[in-house]
Length: 263
Length: 263
DNA sequence: AAAGTGGTTCCAATATTTGGAACATAGTTT
DNA sequence: AAACTATGTTCCAAATATTGGAACCACTTT
Image (cartoon, rainbow over all chains, first blue to last red; front, top):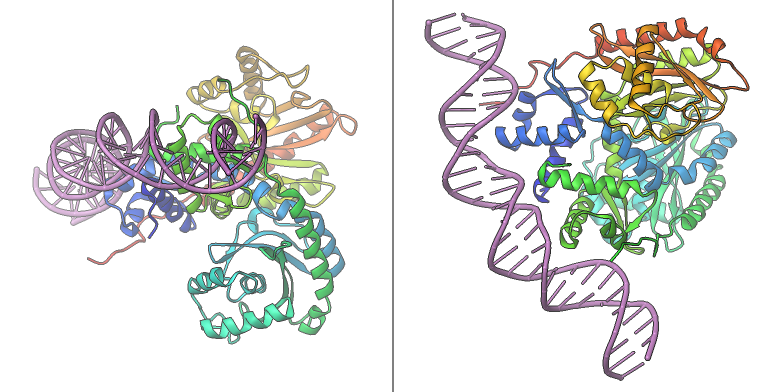
């Protein structure tokens, strides 16, 4: 499934460790692992002295390491839309006075890369890095809808279709129809499909040649806002998305001739 | 130097890619790399299809991938002090009305894991994940000072001693003396050692058995505050640090018997 | 003191990685 | 249009790292 030799296995293990929400012991990992004792042991050691994991000698537990945070900072800074979109999100959130999300696709899942909370100040990492389902969130559907057919098929096949609420689309067919509608309309809604009482409008962020960069959304609770009111924000969302896409375009130049090495 | 077989090399390459502040081409990487063409090529491929790197086919460039952001979220949530310290930082920053930093040691460097900016709302990832020198920042020195002798020696050996300002300590000996003073006093100052006009007071966060968990600091510009005024905040800093340490203590339990697998 | 649990180390068989060199594919120059 | 050049990609036998069953060690429990 994972492949890619030792490196793939090591990253597998890394994911596994990260997946428990707290430090884990060797035995726990072993029980859940596909790898034999000695192999797992060595992988953990390698990752630990690479600082990808942290080992707590006292409790004999492994936890994801700080090197990841350092690396992710770089990833976030240069390959996420977040730094480019920041100013635009600030403005949008100030204008609409609702929670704004910025997301990208990662492996057929939604990865939130930034957030503005109208009420309280931002919550840092607590949200950047979070993942969510693609088939039942506004941003997820907005992105899926504009994917090239082949990619969309692939992504659809990877959805797990858990019925979170009454409204959740739980079949590929139903979702596909919804995606077509979104494609026509230009933006997506989340009609309490993921969480009861939570609705949103989401807009894809597309390049000139229609490649999906990400999506942004405005979220509200049904007690405070209606779908119709959200829909009225569509032009503002579209404008913001376009502005972000334009900025991204300028940003994405390669380095080209720069490096030099002696004979 | 790096060791750890293929995995080590792959992570090396990952670091390398991250270290350029923007997408890089194969040739650039090759020129700077210790690995031969074919090897580097395969490592990049592996990392790419593991989503640790992202490859832009159009520009033929590599950039750190989104999987890192996902992993780092986990790392930040469970092995950094940040989630535990959040409430305490909020309070402290509200009280002192100055910028507050929370940092941990990563590989003899300072890794900032959270920040409160008195003036404007938080800046997300833009600061969490940032690294800085240990020998010339308040938090860095506060942590170094309370490290067990062996660890401290090792960390000192890894410092690079760039003279950022007139005040920067540039020798191991000078720094060692400063660290002793800090140890006696209980907290550290940054007397414009890293950036002219910027001063701070920093307090280590220690466990019951004096293990260094991290450090926190209050920073100000010389135009707005003096060292003496900062020093008056010491008790508040100490209280906050103690509270964080106490919370961390409770948090850090291992999982213990929980997992089960059928025979 | 014997049995059990959880973690660490060994080592020969095996599968992977290695890297020099050849190959492919634009893009440029003569 | 042919020769040249700069990049990126693929090959393959030799060198090397990974593998995992089993033995071992250090504690804790019965």
